[in-house]
Length: 311
Picture: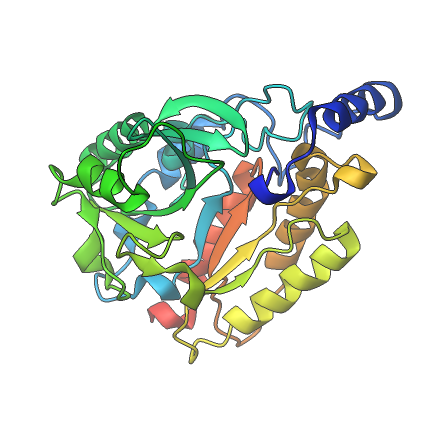
């Protein structure tokens, strides 16, 4: 994972890349919780492309278990030697596989948005992201997409604010976008994109008011404890707040790329979710992952139907 404020220098990245190439074998690429393949199983897309159709209209979006991806369009490494790439599946494939929370990082260049991870261009524009989401929702009108929008890297060549460019990019699609700071029932947002505002200027759901676990540079042992603790908090269905639990991470000092980190973090998360809940209601909140595998996505989705919340 790259963060603009903590960007790794090109020299350091080169050193990391040499070390990774010499000293580290790739992780097991067949873990059920993690996928490094270009696409998931056909059975997954057939079963979960319309999974929200099984939900009642009255359910609040914040009360669902939503599988999500971190840096959803980060498919390209650039010069990062494995530290920029967070996903293997194209955005359209993620949506068809059941992902319903996407993390979109926009760099503001010449009054338009290009998608970046830190300083690494991801070869896709915000307009293209919009078109992918629109096409998916047109074919699957029972679904909604929750889209987190964050400003990435530094602006350049701009004559207006980030918020003004966002307003311009969405002005002709009022029926597509759901931009409100209030939580919504599913009936209000089917066939729409729900905006989560990470800039504080876009008018969507307030990122700062969500209960988040995103210790993205935590050692894996600590990360596992934090993931478990956040799931425990989210299981309190009396708490109407929106819970967001990031399973993604990286530890550059220990040469743990997002891929290596996910291979262990996702496996732990899958094992945790599969544990019996007894009579306790199930709500995981929004679970945000790098390189999620089909089995992990399916387990997150199915908690929505095992939970007494839906009875």
